[in-house]
Image 1 (cartoon, chains in turn red, orange):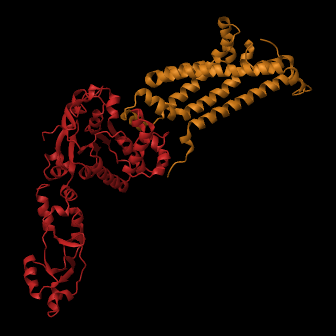
Image 2: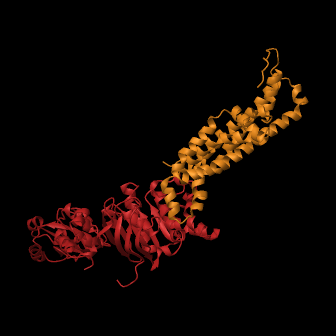
Length: 374
Length: 226
């Protein structure tokens, strides 16, 4: 990548006063523009320290940090921070200000006129999915999930190119967390920010990040790679242990059915002659075959029923089981679940009502063997 | 300093004609009482804000500041008024110095507690959004410290209104002069009036401070979401 990164950390170190050891030791990291990068690692790995050095809430003791090629220390810290969105786990909304006033904090500090501030607040409420009636309430009157949406809206208020998020979804329950993660991804497709996100949750990193920087105690960068690469080829034993024994399963959440080369499988057209069936069963080594008609999948017929009713047309044979279905947008994890609970050990791909092929465990295994995007 | 005559039971609690005859004196006493209270409170607020500012900035300074304020608070008021007379005479200054000093302990403590109660994440968010330290203090921390500060102001105000009466021994003291006058002459009426007006004044100022706090903190009136 020859393009200039949005954020560049060059040999950055931090030693806190009174501490013998460095919290972060000579860390270099390029964060590409418009991507989500997760900083992850065990406690004491300096991930939050690293994040807070980017907006100078913590000043590095060595090295250099650049945003868009400009040293962050070249201007006043307060001015720098107004151009960087900042979201924290405990949200930190101002309890004495309404939601609208909270969102308007940075624009007002920048001296925007009232009409512009009001318009921006409404736009952001819509963007993060807050109802307009929430705007006049106080933070204590909102649920945790709503508060975190306000936190994101407040961080985006002055349209900063960079967003720093410190465990943004750590304080909400798992269901709300999953929803907020989905919302962040949907939001990112609209705003295209450069996002640095600190998390201790490998699943969250795998789900939301384009690249993951895995840090070890003392701010040592162990691996910096896409989620798929991190899970497929851990750089060392530390990475392998950190990502967990189920890293193959985690990779399933990264891939979609549409990433696989899906074959038709043991499928016969319902209008075809009965003689078309034996070669299909033999080729697929299967005791079931599927019937299709006009591009739609009708259901599965067992070899037993086929052989027991030698004079029945294919279309009239009993279809013992409905198809277990997935869509091209389903994750491979979802496909695997469907296959596991299907009597035919297959998942039928339903592509907008049309038959899109049959997925088997063998296909999933083959798909995972290849790196992402190949 | 002087012997007090014993009050007689036959002496009526209040003689209403006194109001008419001595109205000017009552009014002057009330006015002086209010002035002494307001001046003492104003000085107390300024000094304790400065002390609290130092204590919040340099944590090590809080114990000595608290110890000093406590020490002032422990000096008996009659003694302190008397001690100052050789230096500042029978003046308003002599009255105000002890009154203001007595507010320091409660005001410094409430300001420090108020600012310390501001949640760390709120302060972090304010810094992270690029507010200057001054903007953070005035726009975020001070409003959030107000519940503690208002409580401290109410206690200090009520106790100052009561203490002002003691300054009567140096010829100041507002309504305290009426009380002292009654005691000297074994005459209930000025005592009753002085004490009653002092109580009413304390209650009114307390209610006003409370009301001002409610107006200044609209967020505290709303209920919490589940």
